[in-house]
Amino acid sequence: MRRLSSPSVVGVVFFTSLLLTAQVLASIPSKSTTTYPSPRFVYVLEGNGVSGWNVNPTTGAVTPTGQGVVAAGTNPYRVSPDWGGYRLYVANVGSNDISAYFINRSNGYLTPVPGSPFAVGRTATAVAVHPSGHYVYVAGANDAAGDYLAVFHVNTDGSLSAIAGSPFPTQVNPTAIVADPSGKYVFVADSSYEGYIDAFTVNDVTGALTPIAGSPFALTMPAGCPGGTFPEDIILDNTGTRLYTADAFDNAISGFNIGSPGGNLAQMQGSAFPDYTCQNPMIGFDPDTLTMVPSGQYLYAGNGGAQTISLYNVAPNTGALSMVGTTPVCYGGTSTAPILRVDPSGSFLITVGVTGPNCGGSKAIVVYRINSKNGRITPVPGSPFADNNPTGPVSGAVAVTQ
Image 1: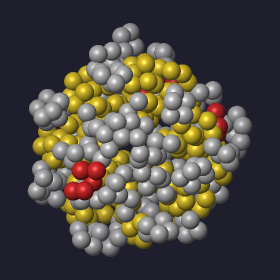
Image 2: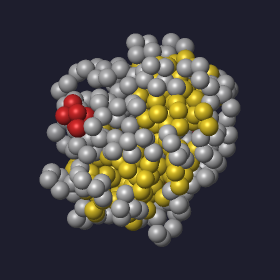
Image 3: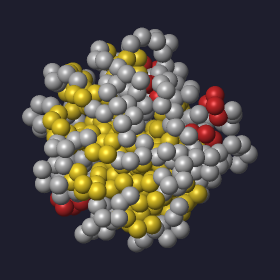
Image 4: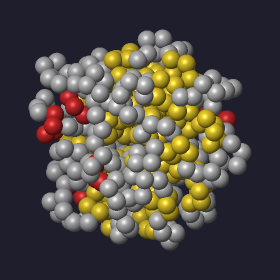
């Protein structure tokens, strides 16, 4: 099930780190590392375009780059930069294609790559990038049999071309994609009543995908919860050993350990972890997005129906989640669907929201500072930051690059 009618329902903050090519894989920090790349640019989908913003790495404040809105496809829905912050990709659900841009590292300006946009075939609901920067993954989801994951090779001039064998079949309605830091695996969340995770290995030479033994992996509901799962988001921890999905329909978070070697998934003890108590999912529908700090110590769940953000501690040995608390309704400008991501440094939590109290006012970028000692969040000075750019039927997705 996909919800496309409200601009505030859409938003993604996807953080990037380190360098392109093989150096990326060697330089990804471990959980014991305390220094991470600082954020530089924020990109916001503005109806049928993308606006660029500078982010102050010390204060978290955002200001326009000055370029204005750059055209995208029709109804842009999801956005992802590559892992080095050199390119940006936008999945457009209205035009069934993907827009691709070069990022100017000096000022954050965007320039379309040759040939952009690139046709996907089905509704383009999600996009992710291989850590090497060589492959781009796009979900083709008509919420029907035959849905798939399209894989594009990034050519030397930045243009995209489908790899041999693409597209690769998934279950119904692939909605979120994540590539693991080692580049070995790709995981896809299928948002349906009986939610699944498609798991693939990546061919080092061709980029082709092969289903992992046991894939697709079924999600389970908390004991006593009615209805289905409908996962709306999927994330990995920084080591690529743990996976979590936002199971919006049963108000829970599923957690899996990733086997090595092989990449098979084993559900964590205690999963699915409740976010809100079981209730009519059409009222709650929480959570619809997840993110973690780079150290893996804290996980945040954005609750669009409740207009809140939940904080969890992550058990260091098992990955199990324990809830610390939930923000007040409309806290700091959080509104109907706080799609969110932690920035590369782990200092800030960034989302889209509104400028006024009680979930009112105009569109804004909302930035919170993360307390490294307990994970709690507080608005940075000046937040929420008003976004006066044009809006359209789908807008608000955010990407943060180093």
